[in-house]
Image (cartoon, rainbow, N blue to C red; front, top):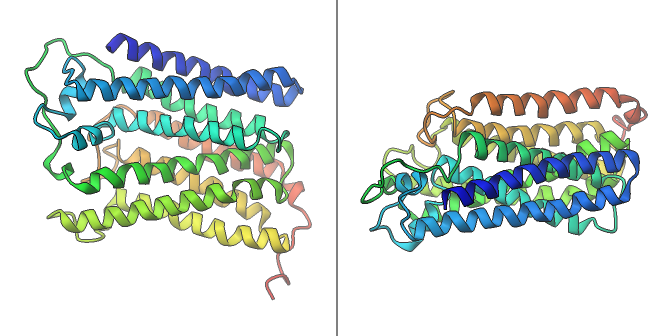
Length: 344
């Protein structure tokens, strides 16, 4: 199980790197066959990550305590429902869930745009798969959910009692789905900057993604607030905990995107601002993911100490500074934008 799971994750990493490179080169050089092979690779990564998820779930439900993750986050007396939640209760499992959701969203984006956005899609897919590769690097080299124990324990540690709540069934997956969903608008924003197609086409494509992710993130925060109220010592509905606030900030930023995108579609306003807002929204989701895995700030929501700080800080630097530099480089594309008068 341990070797099989690791090999599957390693293959997914290799294929995601190929897909990211092939999509970019195919779009840049105009090679349809390269773009097509990159698209097939997107489906392959999704299939491999689905297999990884199935393997970890099987290990949890079969009480395979050879795996460190299973021993740390489950036990024989846990109900099937909480065995399911233990899949994403720990650091490694939640990262696998993040990567798996992103692979599914990548497939959906490719299917939706198979006959449209032919100039944008190769670059958007390249960005998505580069993000996918980042999480797979963490899973393969830093937080392998299939790592083995040297000594087989008789039973596992089980879940933290605070996590044995119906809120655990709904809050993390809904919140994570909202987080992951913003990777798609971010990717299309970068693609629009690369191709100089900064008009309304890319924004029309991602508006539904923004809306659904905004709804999921809002629902996740509401479920989390209800859950916090039922757990003693979690600060009532909202304790202004750093991780709670990290879940709120991208939702507020996405709210601004939804309003500004209407003005761009109807009046040609805020083209540059919509780019900036979507870039910031995605970076805030990554920052929230980082906070739960860091001792940077004290929070009851964190997984504890990890070695991921340099990785996430690097991703944040690249995902924030890189697009803003590209935006400045393409600033001539935004000249003549309506700013004043249209508000009156």
